Structure formats: C-alpha cells, structure tokens
Length: 289
Image 1: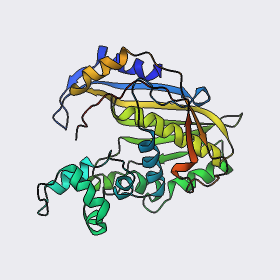
Image 2 (image 1 turned 90 degrees about the horizontal axis):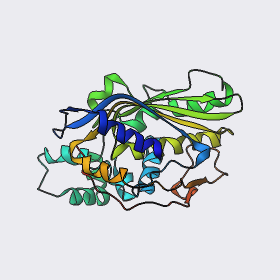
Image 3 (image 1 turned 90 degrees about the vertical axis):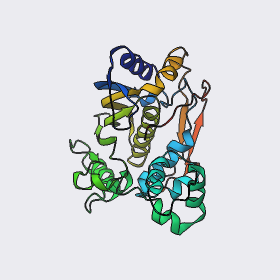
C-alpha cells in the first residue's frame, strides 16, 4: 500500500492547517489521486490492522439499500454509531446512556432502532432508490449490455436530500469502465477524505465492490482509481500517521469471492475469504463527528 503511505506523507509535508466542522482541525490538500491494480492483490492496509468484516458488512448494507444501523450493530459493526447517538443525545428520551448502552438498545429493541437508528437517505438509499431509480441494478444491466458506455455511473450525492442525511456522502460519485480486453475498473470521487481512519476503509470497500460487479458481469479485474477532493489528516491523528510511515508494508493479501454468486444482491459475509493477510498492530484514533 505504498500509494496510501505516499498520500499520507504528501499531506504531512504539504497540507495547510484548516479549521473544520468538527472543531478538531485538519491538515489538508485539495486534489489527489491513487491507482490500485486489482490484479496485484487486495488493497487492504498492512501498516495497521484493518477490520475487514466491518468493511464487508457495511458494503453489503449499502447494497441492500438499508439506512438503519441495526443491521450493522447486530453484526458488531460500530462505524456508524456516532451520528445517530449524537442525535439521540439531543432528544427528550436520552437518559445519560453511553454510546455502548445506546448500541445495545438498538440491538435489543426494534422500536427504539426504528426511532433512533435511521441515518436518513444515505448511501444505500441513493444506490437503490435515487428518486425512484435503482442505480445499482441499472448499472449492472448497462455493463452487461452496453459496456462501452461512458455513463456507467452511480451517484450518492442527491442535493435535495442532503439536509435529511445524518452525514452527507463523503464518497459520493463512482464511474465504471470496461476495457477492450474486458477488464472492469472503477473511479471513485471522494469529496472529503479522512486519511487515517476513513480512507483505508474506502479503498478496500470500493475495490471489493468493483470485484463483485466484475464477477456478476463476467469481467476480469482492472484498476480501482481513487480521486480525493479535500484530503486531510485530523490534528489528533498526526502522531498515528507518523507511526505508520515508520512501518514497512507487507505484501498485499488475496481476496477470494464465492464464484457461484452471480447476483449482486445475493452476496453474504460468508462469500468472502481473505488469505495471506499480514499486518502491523492496530493504531487507535478517535472519529471526528
């Protein structure tokens, strides 16, 4: 994952300090691009342990069109808990529960989950129902029937609904491309990129998504191209980034996907097997909400 470490080093060297919405402060650059050949191995970060099951569950959650964190909480994925918990804390029902107690309520009480677990029309809603259009199924059909198209696009950015989302989409626009030798590539535009915590998840998630689409469309693997808008390191992640830059990356692991799945909506967590994943120890960092 030299590409990722190069990004981190570039921002540490050239980033300008900016105040931000969370009040944490960032060091930021505008405009950066990484490219990963998916035939070289699965681009999962090796300079710190990355929780793959969270990445896969989140991706399956997007694909399903779900926007309630209950599925994630039921599968011990905590990455979306902060935003609904913040909203719950402002409600009259809040009784000084911790975020862990909030998650337990989501898991055990369906009515509570319905009331406080929904994030609004975030990623899954837009992928599967963008003003009545199922973008994901449209994309699959278009790739199969019109692979030379320059309109192989899914957008999560739906301006009239941004105000209703717990968090406006950070990874908001993707375009697919089929080469003459039937290799599928994906370019993601990410308007806001949290380099230490978010970007490793985003690289792995969209790489895996590209692999899944390639499989259901009977295509070979091409590249994942990651284009970043505001690429930033939060001020409370500087030391963690410097620690990663001291570590030598291991060879990339291999991702094996159940070859029998030919419907993008039919994948489950058991259809993915990661092999030969070597990694350095986890490095903790706080999410800026």
